[in-house]
Image 1 (tube, helix red, strand yellow):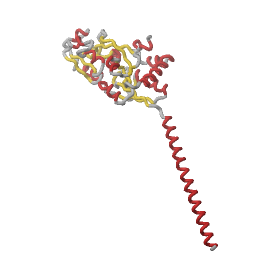
Image 2: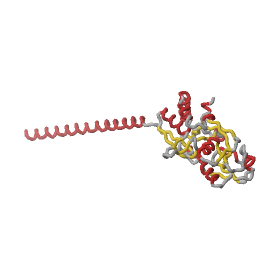
Image 3: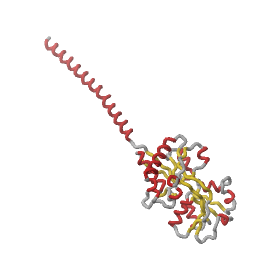
Length: 284
């Protein structure tokens, strides 16, 4: 009888111990999950915001690829410095210039910032546009040996222009330079300015209709070319953001303004002497 009672007592103790251990296991599991969730949130909150700049990778001196295969240029350096001030991770995305706004809307980049002309159509479409930062004009680039001395001499000639640029818009049927383009023998559109210049060098065209700073940079680095002394189509450069992205525009603009105030902007601009006189933030 006593043996039976002892056996029953031992069984009861084992049951209690088992339940107690199981209970401990149950209480510890949610605690571990809570800790993991907390760590994930902290890690997430510590991650840097990634800001992707959309550029034309063949648009010196504003944006291009250097000899080391790195993106650089005035616009690229300014954007990179602005992101550093904001504590953002900086990335560059090379857009197809003719489809730049489509790619912006698709989220492939957070802005288009690459010597981009501010067009009324962009504002009408709802894009957020920064304050203009550069005064630009269009010019005509020809070979030194060319008989072309002015835009009037382009009559009957073949002229190249980059797709999706303000130059193409100016030469369109409803553009400000439509009367001029109507005199051309042929208007050739190319995907990049470098391809326009290649056409000129290979005698595929007689002239290139191009942004002044790009033409100046090309002439400085390549012999045998000159710029016609005539400015065509005044315009201004700005930065384009998506329609719902005023916050990014304000943040970038604020960072750039602080760089102007402390001299960082001017220091970067010194590397690009051909554009300094037309930078609006330095010539107010």
